[in-house]
Each structure stands twice: as structure tokens, then as C-alpha cells.
Amino acid sequence: MTDTLLATDVSALDAADPLAAFRDRFHLREGLIYLDGNSLGALPKATGDRLTEVIGSEWGEGLITSWLGAEWSTAPRRIGDKIGRLIGANPGEIVATDSTSVNIFKALTAALSLRRERTLILSEATNFPTDVYMMQGIEAFSGGRVKAVTVAPDAIVDALTEDVAVLLLTQVHYKSGRVRDMAAITQAAHEVGALVVWDLSHSAGAIPVDLNGANADFAIGCGYKFLNGGPGAPAYLFAAARHHAATPVLSGWFGHARPFEFEEDYDPAAGIERFQCGTPPVLGLSALEVGVDLMLEADMAEIRRKSLALGDLFIELMRPLCDTYGFELVSAQGHAERGSQVGYAHRQGYQIVQALKEFDVIADFRAPDILRFGLTPLYLRYRDIVETVERLEKVCATRAWDKPQYHLRAAVT
Ligand SMILES: *Cc1c(COP(=O)(O)O)cnc(C)c1O
Image (tube, rainbow, N blue to C red; front, side, top):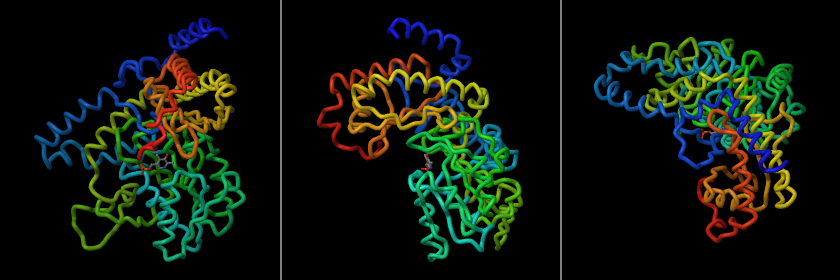
């Protein structure tokens, strides 16, 4: 394929892209190619105005009356219902609240409360670290009654025994982008009487998810990645309606049936509200809601189709660089198994990601050697993919990565 041919093909793809108009709804600096929206989504243009309104009018003028007057108190449930429309949950099955890590704790302990006779929490060894750390914390807190067990990624189904209370899995792997079959694994777990907590951090807003179609028990995920909710945005927790009798271990007053009765004893709310803990973070929720509303305007099937097309183009254009410079594709080529990111292993991965920033491309690095390129169809164009590979080729050809400052690992990668 010649450069001109490619340029023509790509501009035709951009011109015909049904999602193209969404790019203008985001603040993106001219010239920058942002391939890290799977780690921190871009800023929707509407977020600033919404926050100004919440701060100036709702907080500044309305003060405490805004808990009811501006519907702050019901925001976790309202935004949860909106997220539910993106991931196949019914109204009343999701709250937007707390961080993903805290929600992992809440979902795991809720599942344990429904399987009191069982002792194991199972996951894969290469899961996102916080998921496994939270399991280990529960083991420590239980005094050893509950055990956190991790196995190799391909050994999960075989490790499902009748001792397993709950399986914690991330649907789209944070490094490789590999997609798990949610319905099949949930079914395998249910066959031995285990429950499943799905981590959707790299799924919601990235691929079509159908929680109730997969008969899912619990799920949690991030608000600041593909949902574009802003740095440290509140996360969300899904509990299928049939599990709303689970006992919340983080039994804070916002999960109480009647928080403003100030009763002496804890009595959890009947529905999903019992999975709230403390006072909702209103500013964070307000920014999250803008991101979720924007995502709801787009057709998820189109998002998926474009994400796969961007990934296919990227993989195709990277082939010569793999041969010449030793990149090794770690994401699946098959569509069913690939999320909305493409990863490559390279020995100088960290340095290359740093050097790419000089060329105005932001990707990220995940230890020990993975370069991760997040594909966000709402604000990426096909020509950004062509440009990225051209700039990457420059970094390699000029050895721009081989500078002393890039050999020191920064605290946040
Ligand atoms: C990003 C991510 C998290 C982040 O958890 P926080 O509590 O928001 O820091 C957790 N799990 C997975 C799989 C992730 O990708």
C-alpha cells in the first residue's frame, strides 16, 4: 500500500464515519493524538459549564437545600440508571459511588454474605493489582477464614470448585485487552454454585455489555476511563435485583433505609441504595453525569464497529515496525477477543512511550514491557492512527527514546 493510497483510504473512512461529529464535543489540543482514553478519558466540553453551574448556583446559592432542590441526594441512583443503559442493567440495579477499589470490596463481601459456607475468592493472577489486593485485604480481615486464590488466566474455569464463594474477573484485561466471555464464565460459576463479580473498568463505554443477558451477579467499574467522567470520578456498582438482600459490610448511613431518621441501628435500604456508604461526592458525580450523557447519545454498536476498525488499521500499519524494530503484538487479532485497545510488548517500551510524547502522542506503559494504545471511537479519527504509526516509526528510526531522562521510571506511568 503506498502512502497516497493509504491517505485517500483513510480520509474516506473519516468522511464516512457516523461518529465523527462527537470529536468536537471534547476538548482536545490541536496536534495531540490521545491514545490513553482507556486510562483517563478526554474532557467533554460541556463538563466545565455543568460544574460552574453546580458550584455557583447549586452549591453557592442553594447551599444545603440543593440536596433535594438540585437532586443531589438521588444522583448516585440516577447516574447509576444511566450507566445501566450502557451495560444492560435494569433501573435500580446500579449506584454510582465510591472508587472502583472500594466497590470491589463491597461487591466481594456482599457475595460472600450470600455464600457464607464457602471460603474461596478466586481470580486470575494477572488481574489488575487493586482487584487482587482487595481480595487479599478481605482474607487478612477474615483472620484467614476466607482465602484469596489466584490462578493462571486459562485455568479459571478448572479452578471453579464448590469451595469457591465468588469469582472476581475483569472482562477486558487491562494490559492485553483480551475479552472474556461473560455469559459462558458466569454460567460455569453458577454451575458450581459460585457468584461472579465482573470488573467492567475497560468495558463500559468501550464494548457492548449485557449484564442481565449474561445473568451477571455483581459488577463494578471506573467512571474516569471510557465514560469520560474526569480524574478520580466516582465508580459504580451493579447488583442484580435478586441479590439485593446481600448484607452490606460497609454499612454507612447513606445505605440505611431511613438515613435522616438518625436511628441507632443499621437497617439497610431495600434496593440498590444499600450499596451506598457515605455522603455522595456531588462535584465528581456531576462531571461523571456529563460523560455518561454524552456516551448515551452514541450508538454502542457503532462504537464497537469503529473501535475494531481502528484496531485493525493499527495492527496492519504496525506490521513493518514489528519486523524492523521488534514490537510484538500482545492483543488478540480476532474481534471477539479484543477490547478497545491494542498492546505491544517491546524491551524499550517505557522509553518509547516517553519519547512519543515529544511527538505529541500520548499512549501509556504497563510494566514490565507493554505499550498500550487505547482506542476511543468518540474522539479518535482514522488518520490519527496513521499519524501515530508514522510518529512511532520516527521515534524508532531516530532512536529518540534513547535519552538518559527516559531511562528513569516516573512514579506514574
Ligand atoms: C483502572 C482499574 C481499576 C482502578 O481502580 P480505582 O479504585 O479507580 O483506582 C480497577 N480495576 C481495573 C481492572 C482497572 O482497569
